[in-house]
Length: 256
Image (cartoon, rainbow, N blue to C red; front, side, top):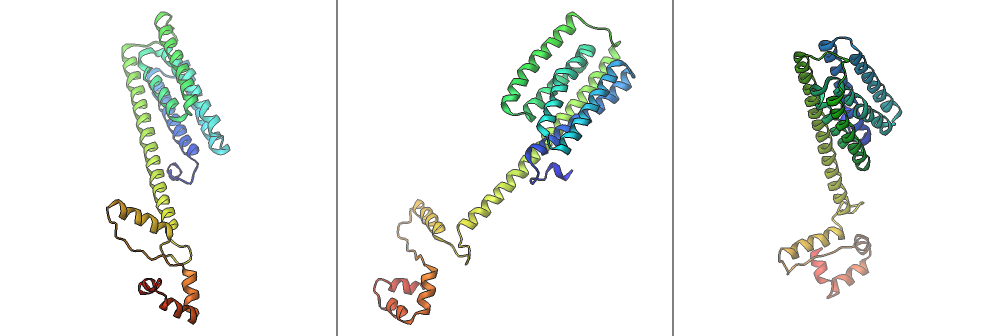
C-alpha cells in the first residue's frame, strides 16, 4: 500500500498500481455480480476470462516493469472488447462501463494515445449501442429484475472505481507537490549560503537588496566580506594596520 504513495517509485509505476488495482477489483466484483444475477452462463465465463487477463497483466507489469505495455493491454481489453460486448448482451444495465473506459483512457494513457483511443472508443461504443438496438442477441435472458440488478451492480462498480482512482491520484499528486516544494526550499537555502561557513552569500545579498529596493528603501548600506581576505588580514599585522589607516576602509573596519 505504501508503494502507491512512495514518491521514490516511478510515477508511471505508481499510476499502474492504481490502474491494475481498480481493474482487477472492479472486474472481480463484476464477475461475482454476474454469477449472482445470471449464474455461470457464457457471458459470466467471459467476464471471468477478462478478470484473469487483467490480473495476469497487472502482475506481469509490476514484476517486469513493462507498465506501459501492460496498461495498453488492460485498457484495450476493457475498452474495445469487454465493455462493448457486455453492453451488446445486457444493453442498458452495463452502459456505465463505457464511461469508466473513457475515464481510464484519459487518466492512464499519454495525451496523443488518449485522443486516439478516445476517438476509437467512441466509435466502438456507438456501434455497440446501435447494433444492440437493431440486431439484439438472446445469449442471456434479461428480465426487468435482472436488468435492475445489473444496473445497480455496474453503477456501484463504476462509482467505486472512479472515486478510488481520483482519490489515490490526487493524494499522489499532492504528496509529490509537497516534496517538490520542500526540495525547492532546500535548494534555495543551499544557494543562499556559503557551503563551508553557512553564512549568507552574494546571491542572498543581491536578492535582499532587490527586495528592499522594491519596498522603496533607497538608503541602504551593505558590507560584503571576502572571508579568505578577512582571514589573511587577521593573520597579517601590517595588512591589519594598513586597513585601519585607510580612509576608504574605515567604514568597513567599523562594521567588522
